[in-house]
Length: 168
Image (tube, rainbow, N blue to C red; front, top):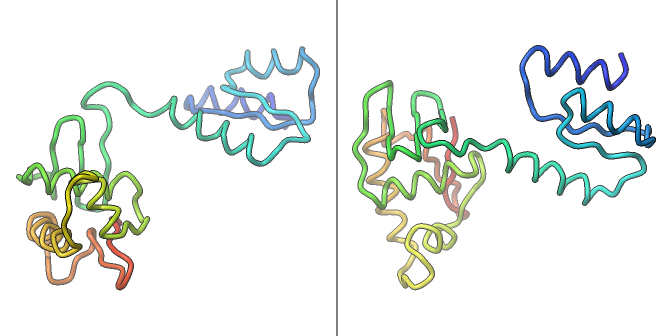
């Protein structure tokens, strides 16, 4: 298959964002690619930074903007940020505002370790002066609500010496 046929089949099956990366640089080729459903078109040779920027732009455009549509799932844990809801095994978990914001920050980058300092900045704000123990206390409280076994967490995990991460 050529790129046009691949794009046609992808969009016919289930519309998803498509960035065509090709050596075909004639205007007619670009117009056909975009007409088949490609969201962007980049010709070779290309700069890696430009490709990265175009991918980030595509991802920004596909993020749900309607309330209630975004649902993040981490195993038995579901987070619906726009509705302020957290579910564990389908049952709603009641969190404080700070616990919810902490969970949302971790969910923004699943699997990525966030330091205590980064969490202090993002959850409590730059004007909040405290040590990392404040984060530890809130993580401990959050775990009692979202983990089946808070002593052996599956979702809100400590990465010794670095911080915390959220995983499925």
